[in-house]
Length: 92
Image 1 (cartoon, one colour):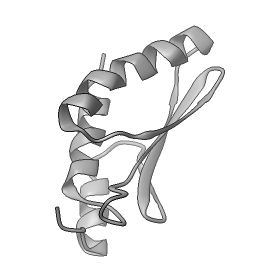
Image 2 (tube, one colour):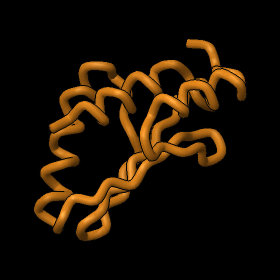
Image 3 (cartoon, rainbow, N blue to C red):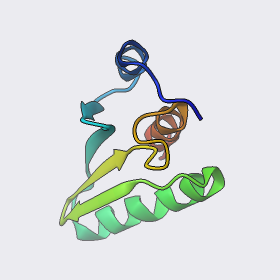
Image 4 (cartoon, rainbow, N blue to C red):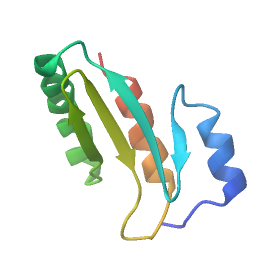
């Protein structure tokens, strides 16, 4: 999958609420209420990530989960990162 240009990345970020660029990745921190909520949120990510064979980097801190997406095999951001970000946004 091809790397996206800076212009494409900025355009796609405009469609994602709260996501920002962090070097060669995009990331967002989700508030989950408490540790149990954070773990439940991470559990919900498994199905879409596995279905796409595209796995985020996750950081759990009690009531928050930071999700970082990058296509490591490509060395940066691709359409897959934004597709998975949209699926994460759609989680209940």
